[in-house]
Length: 289
Image (cartoon, rainbow, N blue to C red; front, side):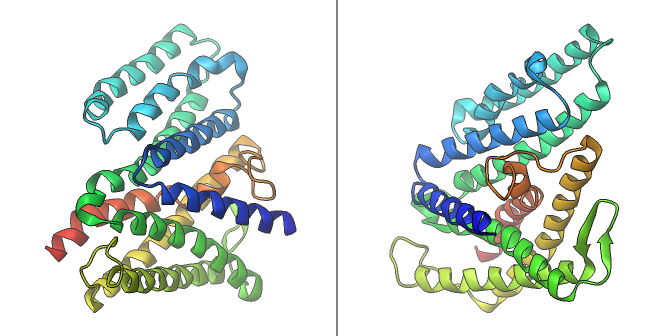
């Protein structure tokens, strides 16, 4: 437990530094590096090793282009690069049809797509909510995603330990309970509203933040958003657990002592980030205009 707590403190400190530099290249580089580590963890989870690096290496330039997609040239390159990448993997199957498992490759590419979408969503917030116009709203929504995911995880863990009786998905994740899931959803909602209240207070007093007031209707929408997102977080966690069971591994990595790998920490974020980003960009600001 001490190792987990110490790792969490260090991780939060690093997160604070990254978010302080949100409007610089530091944030983009950090997200790109985390994404590349996550993709490599998925690559190894499916049993690929050094001799199969030809399957991982193309993901490096692709990830960098996607994570820096807010720049004009990079954004225009995403579609042709995606086509070239898909064509490349198809050619790999043709060339190595006797040795390359299409099942394993398909699993890796599916997981890779989910990972890329997750981290791209965080970068997309920076693009669609530029600081010049929206001040620190993008940072708030990144924190909202993490609060819903990680806060929900913690609430589910403690609620499950205290009240858990009914298994949620025993074959996939035997320790998760229905009671824990309900506690996780409630915890996500409470933390999301608390974060919004703090941000709303700062936003009305500090010039660096958006000056617009946050009204009751927004709190209502955020409560619904947080509840649904928390359910998506549970699904992301179960999806990652199902993959681990099929691959026969306990953790995706060891980068976080006591916690596992990047995917072990970001599994609940995977579906939340794109959902929240989609809602923010297509609903929230449309309603506020």
